[in-house]
Image 1 (cartoon, rainbow, N blue to C red):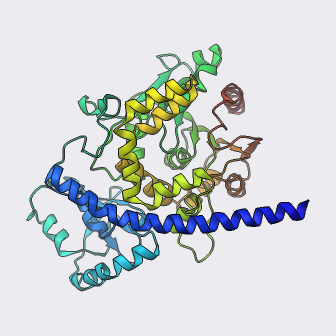
Image 2 (image 1 turned 90 degrees about the vertical axis):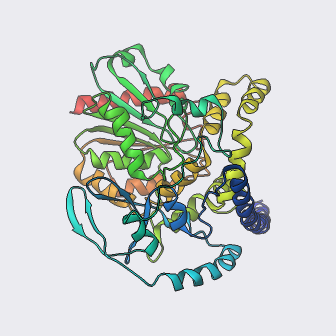
Image 3 (image 1 turned 90 degrees about the horizontal axis):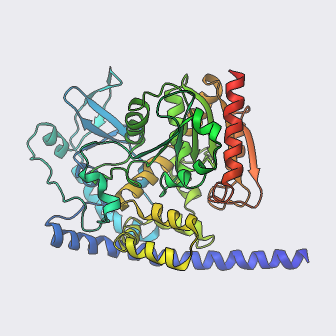
Amino acid sequence: MRVILRSLSMIGNLINDVLSFVIFSILDVLDLVLCYVYKITDFIVESEWKPCYCSSPKEAIASSGKILVSEKGESKKIVCLTSTKLQLEEISDTLYTRPSLVSEVSKTTVKELKRRKIDNATTVVTSVNKSTVRSTFTVNNTIVEMLQEKIGAHKSHPVPRWSDCDCDTCNSWSNMCKDSLFVHTDGPKDKVGDDVLFIHGFISSSAFWTETVFPNFTDSTRSKYRLFAVDLLGFGQSPKPHDSLYTIKEHLDMIEKSVLEAHKVKSFHIVAHSLGCILALALAVKYPNSVKSLTLIAPPYFPTPKGEHATQYMMRKVAPRRVWPLIAFGASLACWYEHVSRTICLLICKNHRTWEFLTKLITRNRIKTYLIKGFCCHTHNAAWHTLHNIICGTAGKIEGYLDTVQNQLTCSVNIFHGQYDELIPVECSSHVKTKVPRANIKVVEKKDHITIVVRRQEAFARELEEIWKTTNLNR
């Protein structure tokens, strides 16, 4: 029997390998074709095409009003100009380096032309974190001209753009004067106990928490804890600026501004899912004396093997270019194919109301309805940059975050993982445990990446209440 099962498994893997090679080869070509289709359509509709990362990251980033620089021996960085300093933010090289046979062939000529152009260099003195640091960067002449204000302001595009969702739900933020995240609050209006910040995962929204866990908290918890569930920048009802690159700094700044500062939060518990775990760790490192407990659900931590490039390794792990399982196929589409994923977003967003109607018509299951709604409420620009700059771009930093949590934070660390999680395997939580030995891990049987919370919300609410209660007793 074991021999038969092993044989069937080998045959299944072989079929998966062959189909994956064929389908993703077709997608490589399709993405290249769609690149030109979108440029032509952008030019027809908006009189200027939207730069992409197929040929030049400099062009794509500079189009957002920011400047791309390359520090020698380091990763690409963008410069945000302010009245007092040049502010650096790192971007992921996976935005513009996604190896494939088609992409390598198509970029050969572009690289040769680029090599001939980059002959002149200058030194930029930058001030970071209020201290002056002298760094040498290779800067193109075009950037020098931008710094010297020889180039006019970048043309603004309509919001939303033709390829973005134009429904009221996704664009309600554009009619508001307040530039902050959408924050769902629950519990007492005045601070009487602890504060809890909930951070959702990729292509989701605050409804992931408010429609599941929040209704299952006891009256006692609701009277003692202020609960904050945010829609991250670019998702749900939060702002979706088309010129944002959705770097980790931008995400953290908006959380700080919309929750910590707006509600005068001094100390807090954090509960985060998937991508939200990375933001939670970064937030905990930034506020080591303020975090009372850290609850991570399916944290995406893949230790980088020696000799591997962290960002590229992370991209291959979360988006393995496989047609099965389906969740891995979806992640691969979103991560590897800028124009294919943009097309999918376009089809979904332009039929947002249709999706909601069909969801309600096919099933009365409220859970599926809000999950579909959360999936629809984002733009391609937000999803694309968040996936690369947060999940892939921070791959080399997570180990440092975990070291800080272990050595400098005294808060409790609790990890939950679904046994059947096909996107972020259980081993990721084991790796976190290796870095943070005091972390408590619970592997929930027969649950996956979503059902670890959804459909076990009552049990999870009790588990959170116990974590918070125990934390307060130990302080």
